[in-house]
Length: 258
Image 1 (cartoon, rainbow, N blue to C red):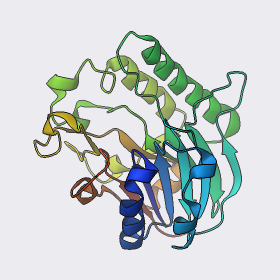
Image 2: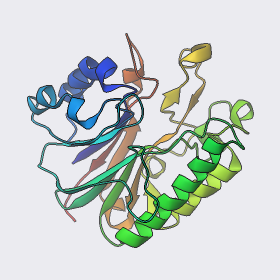
Image 3: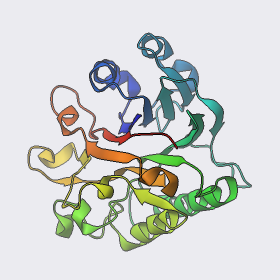
Image 4: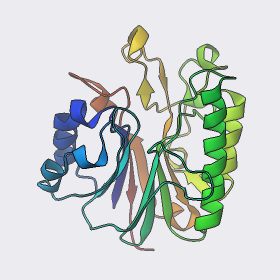
């Protein structure tokens, strides 16, 4: 089974690229982030024409997450529930072929110390609480998405430039480590020790041609899936060409059965 995650940065702007990529890469499951459309406006039909089901949690203009899968997903849930009601469409989960799949779009945080920064840290804390409350690390689960955190300096091409930003600040890294401590393993780091690979390059300052990348898009898996993770990689070529997203897809290949 091939599982992928991709922040498309507007499904409308990137639909043609997504459709072409689905045909070329042929993933079985794709977690999408930053759709920027309401659920009812998601382009279901061209995606269905390629053989994919779509579970969507959309939001007009901002955010939005989805899970595309060749097999029909079951037990689709949106958000994290609990007492804190989040109006932003940032999480959707579903079961696909016995694996619980989560597509997450963690808040960027904007500026360290601001309200959106506090929201980011709180959101990551609630994500860890949701995992502990609703799931078991002993069950097969994959958490995919734009987590807006580069976990270590080896995940940043130029650490000195990014060290105190919302993507690399130690408080954000600590919050992500707390999520992983529930029982998640980084698929990329099972196969690549770094530095890199990177998954995001800022549109500004010619980040991609200058090689100024960060790894903020992740596929995390529970221990029952670690032995099945045959490979994990970044499709860097998808950041090239006309009208790319600022993110590249991250993919993982699972072999065997649980």
